[in-house]
Image (cartoon, rainbow, N blue to C red; front, side):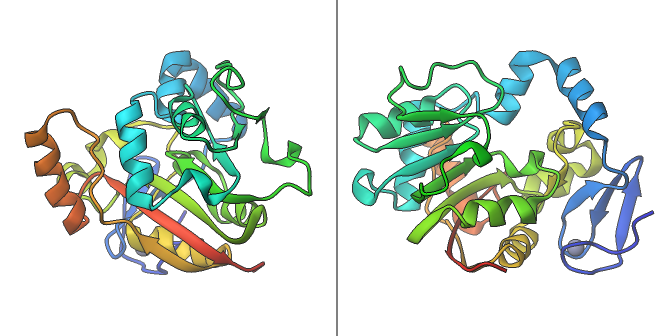
Length: 255
Ligand SMILES: [Zn+2]
């Protein structure tokens, strides 16, 4: 039984079935984590298309990819890029077309990343040659699926070149929708989401993983189609209450 939030140390936790939610930092987790076997059964039940969509930003279009990269301050000439969880390859193709040297980590999807312009495709970070490091690591909607987020971020930090940065996105458990919907929030209903973060708890995890600089991107990202919808979304993004957290992590030192 959990009685203290692992991120903020608060003890005002609300429990619903097998999930807890922290009333202090708004993070959400499992009371008892599903075993790896149970988790792979859940993925199998959801089917490949859902796995692709949830693990691999199946909804990303080239316009969204460009808008996100622009908001992050990414430039094709910055140096080699590592993309974790490349899914359908939309982000890979966008960056490669802009001239970037992209290496892809994707354990599940059968996308032909080399045909989309990637230089290398590995199934796991541990397969990357030790001498290879990156100027940018792109981690879109992945960390909520990871058993040990701190160890995961630390492993990525160790693959950064000096001055390198991580672009990290994940659902916002402190967003207005998450607060309104409580335990019926769709991101909680997705059982493959092991940890759902707020901006505060994600920064705590990043600092524990060794990142001295954690910067939240407030610049709007055009996730929707149409000027009116994107303008409404942009307002919530500037306020930081939209459905996503977008961070830049840098200045990594081994914790
Ligand atoms: Zn908390």
